Image 1 (cartoon, rainbow, N blue to C red):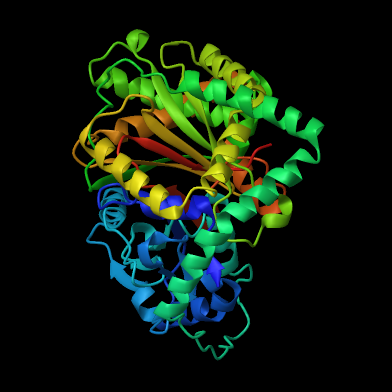
Image 2 (cartoon, rainbow, N blue to C red):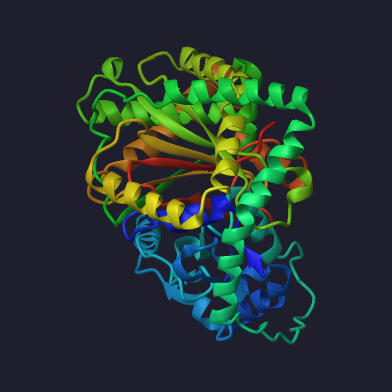
Length: 479
């Protein structure tokens, strides 16, 4: 039986009808849309490469063990691949409205936890595919891998050959109960064996302990409450979504001229967007402290093709109080360098592993209790989330998700991000047809070390999430 790892299960327990735990993306394509039936067939032929797409969640009695992935005996691909169209004129506003509405709806836990919406009626002869995948199934990196698997590289792919598929038998209630009971008895013995194995290498244990202790100290200081701001608020079930765009070559030019990494340039642009949003809401950015959670992939090269969650996180205080864009980028770069040395990511990973030793029933109940409290009480240890994931490599888009009721002005945030890129490009030097050069570079180069949802063969991906306060989501890969 295929069991969830502790972090996968945590994302499942965390969902409560208000805090949606799915990841979403929107891929834009040029040219006429293929027939819906052809789209379904193209996905059907790729399903053997992604077994999770035909598996559903199986909970155990009394949560004695973490949930299982089991084949769905009633799997119906047409349920998961849906067909819709935008109302005229089919522009950005209509697409963002549809995306926000779909992100407000939770996935059905009785079925495999994903959906794909084929969207026609876009302006300029375009069409789109909106994808939703639950966070318990993949993290951002694995989600990008899924898109790479499902989409074809060839303009004219080979004919569809559909393999016969029969679901594996469902585990019986008796088998699930016995499995949970055996785990309850075996867990202490496994923990003792782990302690004995650890003591066999005390020097390595001490070194690892110092690293994790340092990271935990950093976590403790990062979780202190921030001053009240208009971005605080309780979480509702509905979402807004929008995006801002740029190109990878523009990001590279800024990085080369002004310093820092691709990731620093992105975070500085997001900081600029939040500064504009704070000013538009009548607040003084000099008096605002804004903290973002930045997920960090701990996935190894050998883990690609493994669809689960392998992430940790760091907490970055965005320097919205700095007015000069050059100084703002320098401040982001300096703080990110400090965080890389703080071992917060390693500490977060260790806490996740530690959770694996706690009975799932306690973890599930504790997570649900915390989620209910956060839904009712504004929390000020973290104001927003900025996710950075490696997407297919070509022109960049930033996607922004916010609560429908408390963040109706996320267009200001997106506009601030785009404006920040333009400002820093001006500081970096003459423009000289950068967009034309970027398109040429994307077609000729297979190297990718930066930000990008994606344009390959006439497609671009816009990533999204499910947070309540304005949250920036960026497809990227660290340089």
